[in-house]
Structures are given as C-alpha cells and as structure tokens.
Image 1 (cartoon, rainbow, N blue to C red):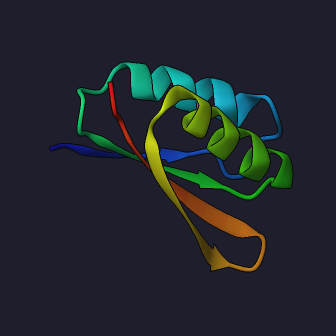
Image 2: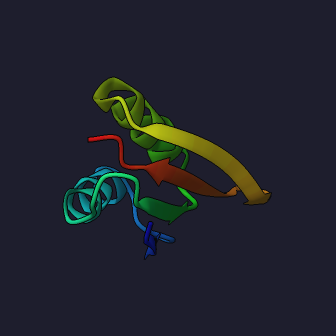
Length: 75
C-alpha cells in the first residue's frame, strides 16, 4: 500500500476536486491519497465525490480552516 500527499492549499473549487480525481486515478487499489485543503467548497465536494465513487475516506481538521481528507482507493 502506497501513500501520496496532494497539496491543494490555497486552491479554490473546482481545482482541488479535479486534482484529487487525477491523482487517485494514478494509484492502485488500496493506496491512500491525503488531500490537504483549506477551501470550504472542496471540503464539501471531495468527500461527496469519494462517497459517490465508493472510496473509503476520513476527514481530519488539522487546524482551524485547514483539513486533510484521507482517501483509500476502492477500485
């Protein structure tokens, strides 16, 4: 299982979601992508997309207004 971090800090929607989709597409099943975001729109869109696609994910607010979304590629 590999782990990759994607820095999307300072980027507004839809850029973090598009970058997340591209990065996850390049990973193998079971690999983990950690997406760092600080935009509330991405905080909503990325988990919704991951859930719809069937990927496992967790959200961690690392500091006020900054989150890490940990996504495990399911397929």
